[in-house]
Length: 189
Image 1 (cartoon, rainbow, N blue to C red):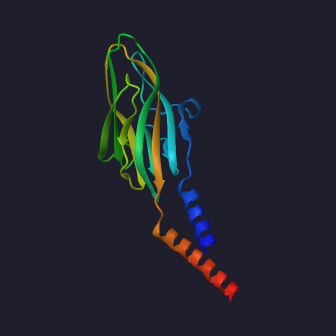
Image 2: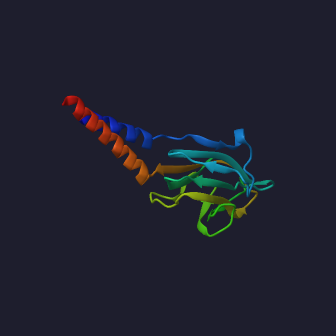
Image 3: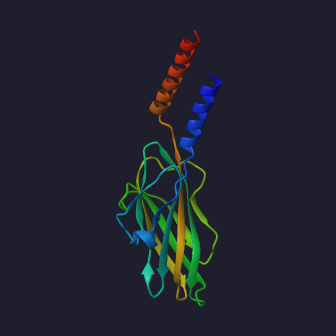
């Protein structure tokens, strides 16, 4: 009986702790234009988006949609500048992003975050609190600001998603384990 419970616990732990990888890379999948209709779908673990942006002689800012599936919770979103090519005369370079519920850049703005592109310090928009329920959401640049000529940079956005077991799934797992226990007892009798 202890072996059955140990195996069941191990399987549940392995299913719940799967790690995702890079889900979108602009250098491979193409540019995410502002107000793009590209929808990212997440799996449990860290889901990474790699992209590039610019503000100066050329402007390139990315917006996209993402889907939180049934039985999932978005725990954190972290934006990090990976490297940059900024004009030396630029003393300030910031970008603002807004998160919208309902997808397609409509609905209520859930939060705004300001990113200092000159800093290499990651910015967490949502941190360690289950926040977003299942649905489609939009992330869009909301403002740009610079002092100087600006420049370009590569960035990484990491979405950490946790699977939340549904009551039906837990009931089925419980019935399965109960069936194994009954079968074992019958075999021993």
